[in-house]
Length: 313
Picture 1: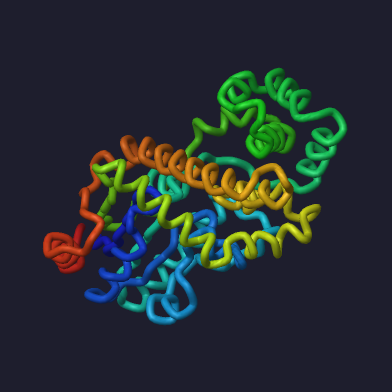
Picture 2: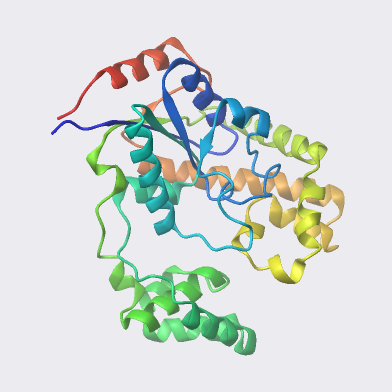
């Protein structure tokens, strides 16, 4: 059976992935599919370095602006949506190009999802009420009793993962650690994949890019973007969208926790830490990927040409 061609391009934040994707799109019939857990949210534009509307008119990105900040979105749903967009792109006779830096999304696409039960809103609400009433420490202790393996892996101050682990236990009767053993087939297993990775060798240069980009975000109105959400802080305060790097720091600045200078310093540091975590992921996830430079080159052009021209059976 002939396998259809797919390209994936991943790398840490500020590594130049978007520019590379657009350069590939200038030369080949690709459809860009975003693999970014923050760009899915409408209104989170500046702080995610989302391409602006004029760019998106020329280079449409799938899986951008598909959810409101107050809507939930899971890794499982992302895999479903990505699979759909890949199939639609191939049906148009084009090549899907998946681009981003959310390593958990890429890991699930490449290696499959753990076979977890669907979210149960009633149980989730009950656990949330328990957190509000008894505190997160108490809930983490309950998790340690029903699933000591997961409890040891999850930080006591990580409410989202603690609550999800308990939700899985209460809805399925099995600890989440048992579900980790069961894995569904990966989305990309049936395709001929060209795996590309941008992993800057010069860490100082990456840090400089991160600082420059954060200052640019602020000059473009990043604080004002978050202010529009902060005006409804009771609605948005605990949502994943607000915990995104950069947004969390601006949120705390608006709440008076940080001065403006502290916001800048902490925002840059948090972004550097994100890049470090992403690079750690890459060492394992992308160890067999083809490394590429952060600028479009003849060698990259030839790589893509050879891949698109090939067929895999």
